[in-house]
Amino acid sequence: LGGDDFDQKIIDWMVREFKAKEGVDLSKDKMAMQRLKEAAEKAKKELSSAVSTNINLPFITATAEGPKHFDMDLSRSKFEELISDLVEKTAIPVQNAMRDAGLNNSDLSMVLLVGGSTRIPCVQEKVKQLTGKEPSKTLNPDECVALGASIQGGTLSGDKDAGTDILLLDVTPLTLSIETMGGIATPLIERNTTIPTRKSQVFSTAADNQPAVDINVLQGERKFARDNKSLGQFRLDGIPPAMRGVPQIEVTFDIDANGIVNVSAKDLGTGKEQHITITAGSNMSDEEIERAVKEAAQYEAEDRKRKEAVEARNEADSIVFQTEKAMKEAGDKIDGAVKGTVEADIADLKAILERTKDQTDISDSDIDALKSGKEKLMNDAQQLFAQMYQGAQGAAGPDMGAGAGAAGNYQQPQGGADDDVVDGDYREV
Image 1 (cartoon, helix red, strand yellow):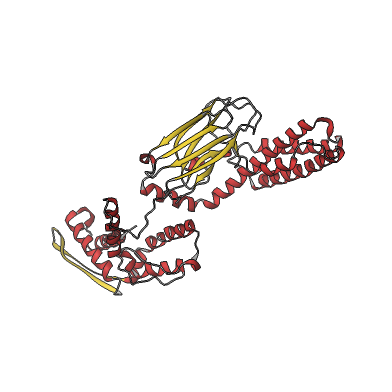
Image 2 (cartoon, rainbow, N blue to C red; image 1 turned 60 degrees about the vertical axis):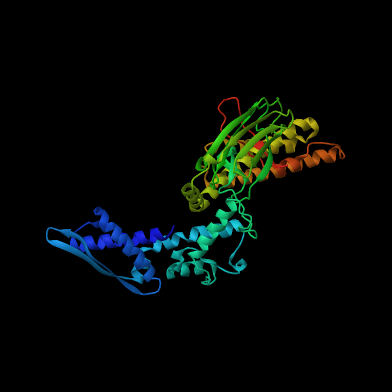
C-alpha cells in the first residue's frame, strides 16, 4: 500500500467521469493515461492542504468531432470517499505490529508517520483512531525513508561509519510450525522471532509399537496445517517397539543468520536422526506474507473454534488411553464396583470419539459432550485409584493425577504415507 494506490483511485475516477460525460474511454489511450497519472498525483498532494482542487488537461484526446478537454473539480471529501477502503487497510499492519510487539495504546510514547501518503488528513486521522495519539508531524515522511535506506546500504556495503549507533535485526516473517494431531499447526518458532535462533521440543508416539513419525514443516499464521504453506516433509523411521508415549523424539528448528532453516528429528533413545534443510528461496514473497497475515486475522475466530473442537477430542482420547493403561497395570487391586463405573465412562467417551471421527464437522454439542465426558471419567478414575492407594496403605501404584494432567498436552504429527504408521503425540519437556 503506497502513493501509487491512492493515485490509481483518482485515475479510475477520472476515467469514469470522462466516459460518462464525453462517451470516450481514456483507459485505452496510453498517452492520455500518462497525463491522468501525473494529474492524479498532483491532485492528491494538493488535497492534503486544500479542500478542493481543479484538474485541467486540455486536449486530453480527440474524436471525429474534434479535440476533447478534461476539466473537473475534485473535493477532499470525494477523494476521501474514493480511498476509504485503502485507509481501512492501514489498520491491519498497525494492529499486527502492536500485537506482535505485545503493546497497547498506553505503551506508545510517540507515533511517527513515514511515507509521503501519510500527509493525507484522513490517513492521519485513522492512525490517531488506531493508536489513541496525535501523530507527530516533525519528521519529514519522505526524507526519513531515504535516510534509512542510505544507512542500511552503507551497513551492507561494509561502511564502518554507517549506522554505528543503530542495531538492525532480521526476524522470521511468519510462524514456523509442524502438523500435529487433527491437522493442527503447532508453532515452534513464532513470527517476528529474531534470527539466528534455535528451538527444540520433544514429541512421543501415539500408538503402541509405532515404527515411524512424519514431520510436516509449515509456514504461516493459521491454526491448521491445511491453511498454511508446507515447506517440506521428512520421516524418522526405525523407532523400536514400545508403548504409546514412551519413545522421545526431539524436533529441532535451527535458523541461521541467512534465514536458512534446518529441521531435525532425533530419537533420543537410539540416537537415530533425520533432517531437512529449507533455503531462503523457499520462503514466501512479500505479497504472500501480507496475505497470510490478513487471512489469519480474517479467520481467527473460525480457526479458534475449530481448534477447540479438535483439542477437545485429542484430550478425551488421551485420558481414555491413560485410564485404560493405569487400570491394566493395577489389575485386581482396584475396587470392582467403582471399576464398573469407570469402564462405563470409558465406553461412553469412546462412543463420542467414534461419532466425531470427522474432525471437520464437530458441533458445539459434541464439544460439550467430549469435555463433560472427559471430566466425569477423570473424577471417577481418581476416586477409583484413591481407593486402591488407601487399600494398599500407600503402596506404589499408577499415578493417575500425572496422566490426567498431561492429557491436554498430547498432539500427533500427521501426514504418514503408510497404513502402519500412526504419527506421534508431543509433550513439552
